[in-house]
Image 1: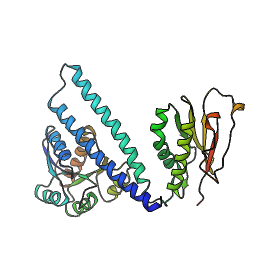
Image 2: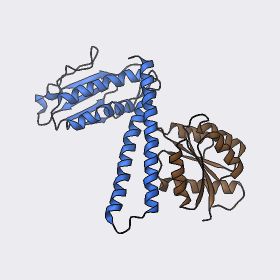
Image 3: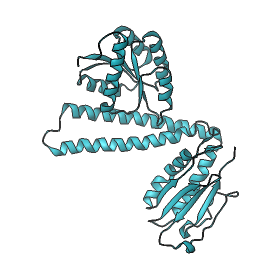
Image 4: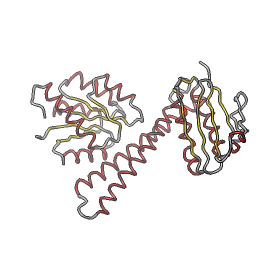
Length: 131
Length: 195
């Protein structure tokens, strides 16, 4: 599988940078943002296929960022990470157009197949060949 | 404690559990990265240590997740909540105490229903369960059931015949049931609030 780009968004810098490192070891070009504003800048500039987005962040929350991405960048798929012990917010995110959601902390073996499925969907919607 | 106080306590606990989840996530990803970069090789002790850390992280995450759910029970103390959820939360509150006293506690609820005044009910049930756990000898069992109008807590100290059980029943209009002697096979009930 050729390398493709994903954006990880979480205010916990040590979490998101370590996860990004692990994804790079698996041939996913993982970018990192620790707030909503930076995330939207990177989506605009880098056009990742997939954004993995923490729901609970200070300032602009994950569901707000999700809605902006869905409006401005229909060719970008979003996977939500929710730290709450229930699926309530994840289901809310799905109704707002998220591709999928996972309870945090998600195992990388669980996360990558979802990311690949989302990347396939994003590539198809852009008219590219699936990843 | 009024409902505003309880909501504040719930928010505080929810924030704490959220932060704990983030800490666990950082530890998990960091040990995962070490495992990626330093394969275990032939030394089984390394693979065993990775496996142990992973298992304990899962254990810790399970605990934090349960306390996070508990915290969100207090989001709105007046909103009706499922009986099964409230019983789970009451069991969570007495879980450690019961294990330390070797008392097995479980719940068998055949039909779920929405309970108004959920938080007040939860706290009463937790107090009742705690007094039951404290009064039972090691090796006993405590079971939570419901007949649709009450939640029934039955102590089974083991080794007793059915006729020897006192089967005390408190319908709980006056108190939380502290006077029930669970060590003699007592039964206590809390009437479910009506809508």
